[in-house]
Image (cartoon, rainbow, N blue to C red; front, side, top):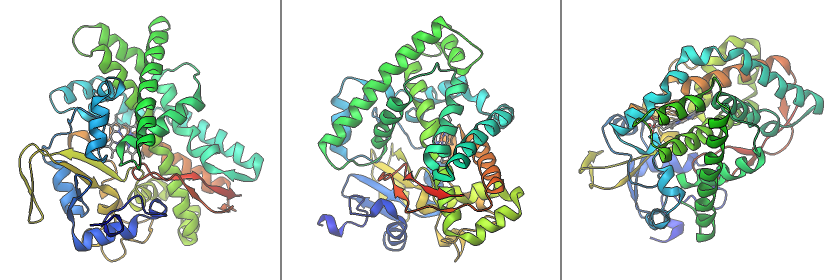
Length: 404
Ligand code: HEM
């Protein structure tokens, strides 16, 4: 099969601007697809849920899913961050997963997160002030990026850091969640992981000297407490929380805004009934998933959709495709409907033991952002063409021009 004939070819020009026709083709022709990249891709809703809820592994020593097999091997050969970062809870099975997750889970419950609402509202308003001052501009710069970045930085209790550098590095690191087109990109992904791990070590050293009432101080206490958390594990959890805390929610806010701007009737509805914002956030998550795929590894032959996935296979669960599966959502699966009754059944946060730890936080940030955005700017409208970030997995706008 040549590259142009691939059922899923993320390197095709324009693919990341709109991957949904590809997902539809996959669901219709080969929903449990043995891809020549060396991974199995699962695109239907019911199959996705089956995989997520079964006890497949996530441990493959390496950072993350979706890469080509030889790209994994290159990261494996690297002695640096690839190995350390794969000590995060996202890449561990129980009982280690349970131990790591329980160390921080308390802070992310809906109740603890709910207490952050006034702070979140204040940060949203700061973003909206920037937009008002410019009469619009790039929503990613003014609101979608700074909001989650600042929220997770405060929760962790991080000192002011080189935000621009961290933003650039995490932008590279998250590409370890997808196939990369060439060796140069791969080298940058690996180097970014190494540098982020170094920055994390510096932040931990700083926090040891300046403890506070924050999450990183609590994690350091657990590490010092004995055998609950090793030094490298601490680095890995910090990088995971930092990166997962903002690289995803930025897409929720920006993809959701694109969806509203492209569906003016839905924008009008939300403006009329801002109390729909919580449900609208669920629909945005369904309609254009901030994380398009997550992964598992089979530990035994796994039967799915009439096929047998061999032991030791990477399985990519295409959340964004499951979220548009007409067999589950009905004939209007491709339509944005912010009052959709069952929107919350999307799989954008995954499912099973790895279900997104930050889901309540992301929901809060999203709800407050949309409630205030549409009420403050009744004239919200597109200000130019959206420029997509070119990522296959953590896909969203790099630039989203608006006018108000
Ligand atoms: C895991 C999505 C926001 C922290 C995950 C997973 C997905 C996801 C798909 C993997 C689930 C699985 O494989 O079953 C999202 C989306 C977000 C978001 C769409 C925003 C809209 C956040 C935030 C944080 C966070 C704000 C805060 C720190 C985590 C962590 C994990 C995770 C720590 C690993 C959980 C585990 O392995 O037990 N997220 N996430 N996420 N997310 Fe999120």
